[in-house]
Image (cartoon, rainbow, N blue to C red; front, top):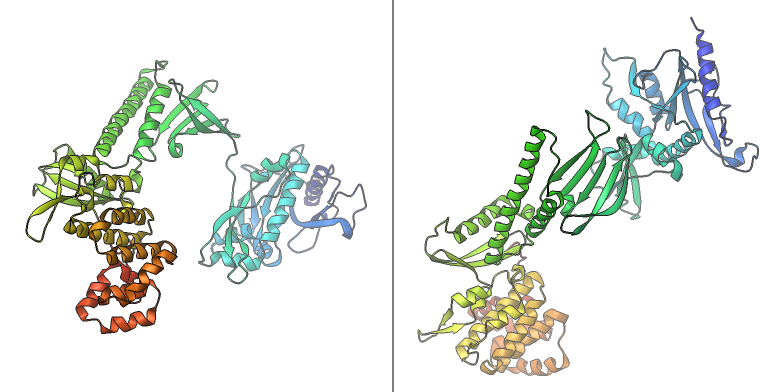
Length: 592
């Protein structure tokens, strides 16, 4: 039987010999036959000062260590650690390096375990104290790198982790407080980064101090590195000569090569060795449609072109799988092409991402397509419907099951929008002015589109001008909900078109309130026009002028003299949102 003291001596000697090349490391404080409770000493790390003697002046830090030696072979890199010792480390240290040396072979095998405060806390959480609790906890260890300077780098990084993990901060990890982000910090020389990462990493929650506004890193969790990848940017070209940017990653552990391209990495190509014949490579293609409808169609077309052409036949099963994959891609291409044709017919942007649609919205889109193809018969035969798809809004008119987007040229070609005069007769109006709600969310909205609807329209007629003025007021209400600037530009263009048929006061007040929305002040020329309106015989015009001139006291006096009906009239106008007499404006979500 080997003397335990001799085993211990051999273990410590192996550690000293291993680190002997590192001139900045002092292992003399690892004592043989040490009697101190809990720890076996420390490894002292000094600054590189041209062979200067070790002293307090050049000491960087000392690393507490626990050393265990065994004459047995260590299997699966696992070794039992005393639960009593773990509790001691938790209470009396700020972390340590646990070293285990197997003297069963030559050269000696040295294993290490980083036990940062976070590690110890996580290990102890897995131990539930009961009468049957084992006196030891089996932990996974790592073999020290062949290069002792790589291990020295690991010690330096571990020391920086110890400094980030004071016990006072560990308790913060249990607090339910929002984190700005979760980060990891590594201190390493470039040539030893891989060894340091393989030794294990630590994640920290990034919190913001309420008083100082400074970032605080709170220990969050330890992690084991399972693989490292060499990543680089490249391009991949299909048979049509089209190239897409790609990200290529190569596993440092298995050598597997993965190329990701397409929208949000929708196309993944992996290359690795087969399980049967390690000399042969297995190439796997995976396609997951992502992004907008147009992006999905583009990606599936690209992939079909990339892998098209004759393939080497390996066996019937693989040939069948390959054929099924190609057929699946062609089916997706056909379906996406059909959807995009439908979207264009409906005036819905092909830049719509189906992932952003709720189940209800997907059902509504499907219903629109069914109506388009007469697979769904609509009753009554004439309907004006509103549809919300993600952040977009749409208005459709259905006549005898023919569905048309109300803000497209096709609608203007097919239908005439008429307005009823006071005498009961009708006159045609701009067909696009029938859409008034959530204009800012209509992807088909444009000033040019709306103004094109005035072609051959009579804007000099007084009743027509009043109709368009109310449309202008609706544009201002839309603006108040969205702050969508083009709505104000459109309102100005329409006012200029109908100004000859409206009272000057209406044109002046409407243009002035548009300017107030733009810049919160009136121009000099507008002031000259608005000021005289404070003496107008119409109480509502006087009130509107005082609101625009920012004279709240005088405006309140006029307001107090108004009848209940006139107060209701004023608060129904968008100009009331610039005053103190209107209820709080509704947000877009409140008006849905």
